[in-house]
Image (cartoon, rainbow, N blue to C red; front, side, top):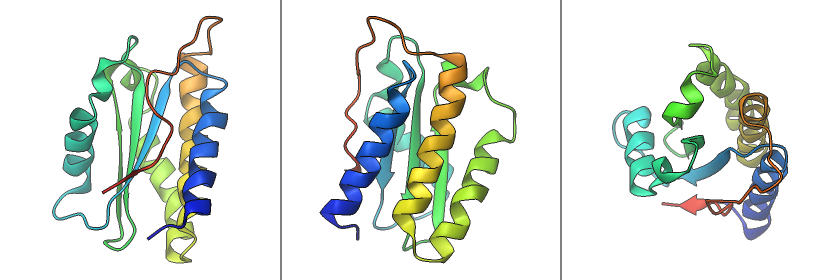
Length: 139
């Protein structure tokens, strides 16, 4: 699926994005996604207990390259900061990379865009704690 180097590149993009925000970004790469990717993203978000962050400002990018599916799920603290079409806009920026088989570049683009949004609403605080792992979840 993705090499160790590619997984580290994605994790580094998460760390870089989170360096400027108290928000929490996670990435899940699924081997296969049966059904609606948004429902799968929500299930994974809940399974990972991402709603347990103090400010409810977690975002999950859920990607199934083989199934050509992707979705983004943001917690309730994020929804007030987004335009209704923001998640779709981010996905549209990621898709051209996926079509070119540049999965890692597409995911990193998505992480960076989400980081920009979260940073505007939740700038990094002096006592910020990284509440969720930056490692990519492989499913």
